[in-house]
Image 1 (cartoon, rainbow, N blue to C red):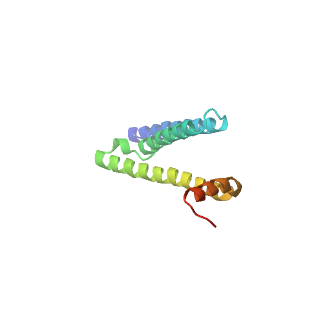
Image 2 (image 1 turned 45 degrees about the vertical axis):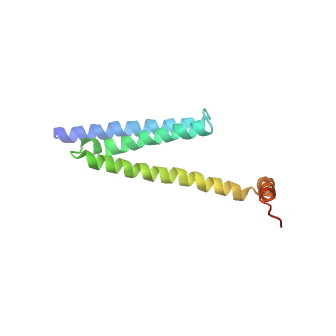
Image 3 (image 1 turned 90 degrees about the horizontal axis):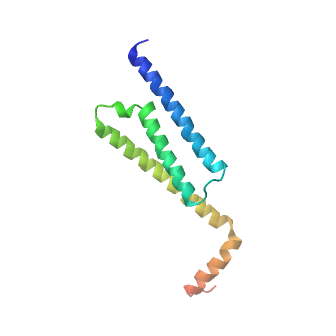
Length: 120
């Protein structure tokens, strides 16, 4: 084996170990209910960003690229995609919760209609 191939293999092994550790950390945070609400969201977002860095660095080898501009563009694109996925999912879940819980929303709807002077 050449030295370059060995270095690449060790890079993949380190990346795999880090990816497994980050995935397990997220699973443990959610499964053990150590955090809830926004602290949990922020912790999972931080773990997701770390996971993204591991994927870009160890599997796509973007850290060893000779042109740093492409690294920044790839990271920015991945960050935009993650934001769209996370906030889009939260928006959809909130909308589903609102539409699937009509008993809870009747009081809220009545208050809004009274405030806005809307009568049926």
